[in-house]
Length: 245
Image 1: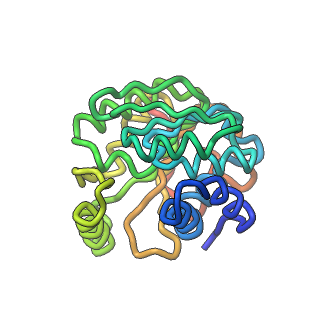
Image 2: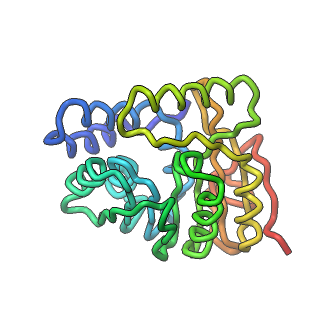
C-alpha cells in the first residue's frame, strides 16, 4: 500500500493543533490510512495540479497536504459544514488556500480551476444533484477532474462499504444524511461527453471498501511517468476509455 510521507502528515497535522485532539487525530489518521491521499498526490505527477478546487473539502487536510507538498499552486475548498469549513480555513492560514461555505446539493457552482477534486462527495447527494455537480465540475476544469467514488457494483465490498456509511450516519453528527452511490460508469460517461479521457481504477489499498478513483483529463494534458496514454495516475488494471466523439 502506498503511503504519504510521514513528515508531510506531521506537518499537516501540526496545523490542526489548535482545533483539539479529535480534529488533529482525525486529520493524521485520515492521511495515514486513506489510500485516496497517496493516489491523488501520485496523479499530480511532476507537473502538479495547478489551481485546484476541492469540492466537499471537509477539514481541508487534503488541500493543505497538496499545498505543502507543492502539488498545487492554490486551492479553493468548498464545504457546507460550518465547523469543518472554519477548521480548514484556519489550517490553511499562510497558504494559498481559501474556503467557501456552500451547499453543493442546492448550489452546484464550481469555480474555474486547472483541477477539480470530488472526494467522497457524490454518493452523499441525491441523484439529480450528483448529475448537476458533475456537469459543473466538467465545465470548470481546464485540465483534470479526479473523483473518489463508491462503486455499488463491487459485490461484498459494496455491501460492507454501504453498511459502514449508513452506520456512520448514526454515530457522527457531521456525516451527511444520504448514502446514494451510483455506478462509476455514469460519472465517466458525463466526463467523456464533456471531452475528457477517463480511467476508473480501484482506490482501496489495504482496506476492505469498494472505492474507486475516476481520473479524467483533457486531451493534450501531459501525463506523469509510467501513466497510461489516457490519463495521469492510471496503472495496471485500470479501465481506460477515450473521450466521446
